Image 1 (cartoon, helix red, strand yellow):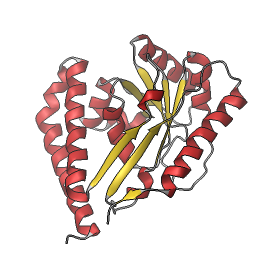
Image 2 (spheres, helix red, strand yellow; image 1 turned 90 degrees about the vertical axis):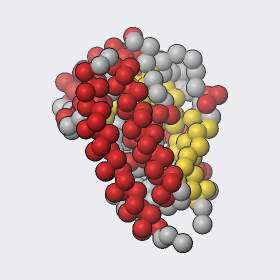
Image 3 (cartoon, one colour; image 1 turned 180 degrees about the vertical axis):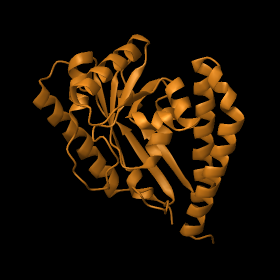
Image 4 (spheres, one colour; image 1 turned 45 degrees about the vertical axis):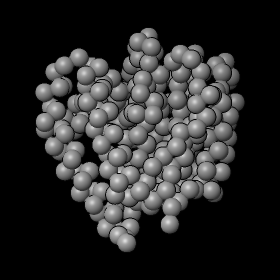
Length: 242
């Protein structure tokens, strides 16, 4: 039986080598229309998740889709792992993902994220960054796309209780669309800055929407309670394989 360490090592090697080949071969696609760039990026993500399933026996399940309203929304998701930075582009394919601006400058991969319409934000730039974020998200909504944001702003270890950043509340107030919370337990299987990937099934749960119109304090409390409460349940009962 192949050990966890060897499986995780094989995944990392295949991930880097495969991603490099896909990036080099597909680089000319960056010159094509956005839908072609998105299709290429989805192919790359599907390769990564398929290789993860083959080497580490780690898969996922998406539940609660009946809670996703029609039309563009703000998707506010828990962030525990590198896994969701890959998988969410496939699970929520029409969403513009908010990410660190410096990621958009990574050769080929970052350029593809920019061409796919994801939104880069400069950390620590205060009001200027917030104005830019609102402008970009309004443009994405006008294009019929949802917005995906990680309220914590960064990956957090399982069980940690970091503060939620103000950007989510600002978008909620400025955009006037529902916010859909999302809970998960990816950190149980692929922890923050951890080498080992445990086999099992990552659960992603779409929760009931928060309608527009709440005051800032009520909104933030509701958002946190829903995400953290549902995440705690998923973390307590992970579907790990032996």
